[in-house]
Length: 272
Image: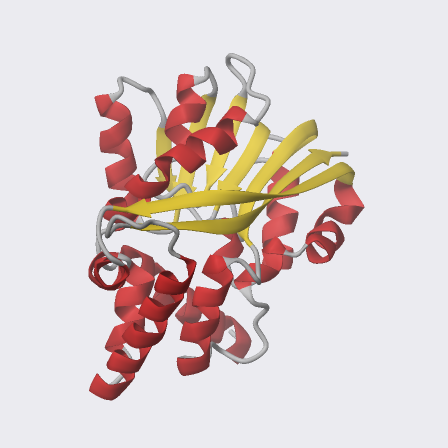
């Protein structure tokens, strides 16, 4: 086995541990409305076969099933899948959740009518593999739908702060390139009959101050928790201060809470 393969195996193991840290369900609940809007814009016919890639705790899978789709959700983090399963059961929804990798989906060619991923598959380290897999498992004429944070939106700026303090492995494309129109068109161009891209805003509203919002993410969001663990005390204080400043600058609430708009790219690809 080559050193490159070993490096990617180690990288992906670390990514899995990162997403399994904390309690992502506490984070995800604050963007359920964004997921519902995203799914509402997706053409779902009763009984259509839908795959939710990097499904997390089920924010997209659940409204898709409620709309009548036969839903399968995959994610690398088993604890998130367990939360998703409990949420689906509470809604009396029959959704199949299983562990899976966006770069190597465990499904046959053309298995699904709709393949979607919301703020998930964009974080896999090899985007060309991801694009190829999303296209492979989607039937001809079916739709691939993605929601991806943009480079210059609020979340992209947050990533920049962390990346400056904790640079990732050299040579890996930035996840937010999935939020760049030119890049997305290039990645899907060979097997798409149509590509429609729209910039939209997700609404973040937390019932506490910017400082408390930073602490909330530090406590419950796995990647943030891991980032802090890799810094010394001074670095942790610096990261917290810079992140709090970003939240405060973008906060439109005036009642002591935190409300921020975060830009993302809504991607709709028709499989050729």
